[in-house]
Length: 374
Image (tube, rainbow, N blue to C red; front, side):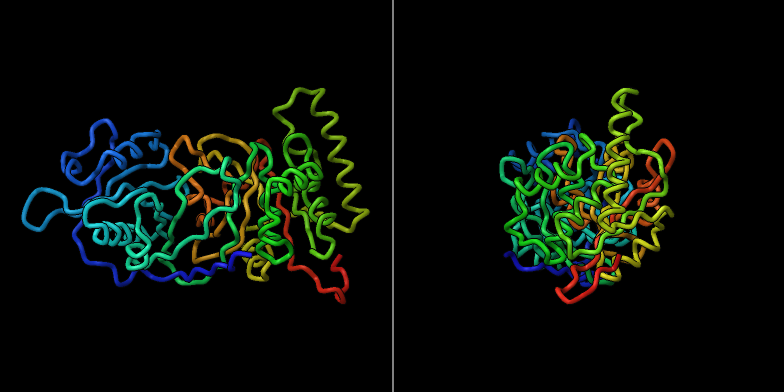
């Protein structure tokens, strides 16, 4: 089993002093100062995808006695989040990394990530970054660099679950549950694979999505010793509005069956709206919260999607997202240990059209002598 990874949030201190400038990155018209810093491989990677949705910009360090640049970094981030990501740092790499950390600090962000395309471990460590454990996703389904690094800029401590990216477009609910249980110690890391992903999805699905009650019941069936509570502030069937009437009818029937299964197996369904305060409190109790949200803010399309809430820092909840949008340069480094401001997460998790909130809270597994909590 890979070691449990722990990352310590720290303030942006000991940053290498450097005067920096920040300019938008236009792949078709890069600044002339980049020419001597960026090699062909890096230049091709920067141009290979359309990063415009992630606000690409350059953080550059000018030379002390001229008009050129001594260092630069291509920086991006998902919208509505509290981090920046270095795609590559070129030239004087320590100066570039320090400039990005200082830039993120001025923006009062929680974190800086660094993709490992060209980053050397010793340079990342010297800049205060910790290595991320590589994804457990099967290689044929993963995208992004083989390594990545993180530096926290806010006080606090969070433990990192393993990262596993969903291998289909519809298994996000199953993956978040599996990752939560691996993080809690109820599932061996080596058991987190595609077989487990598809097996749990098959038990939880409402075809093709996993709705909250069905997912909660499937988690209870798979791990009877784990306390499970479903939070769903509507009693009508959910995630069905985009289907034709005849397809909504039989899926609604399956959701009613999930409600019956929940009653029979002792899975409570809380009809109140789960607040961000309650999510933070649950994480403080070492619970994991599988949260349904819309990808409209972070990815630009209004599709319901499950993420795992597992940590908190001041002003933001730390999530793991099992999906990354490779067409925008989004990789597992973005999706893993992702801080989302409370207000953004509150908005994302109000699911249209009626604004309901759905979640599954999984408590720490009970010992053999502990009585059930429900």
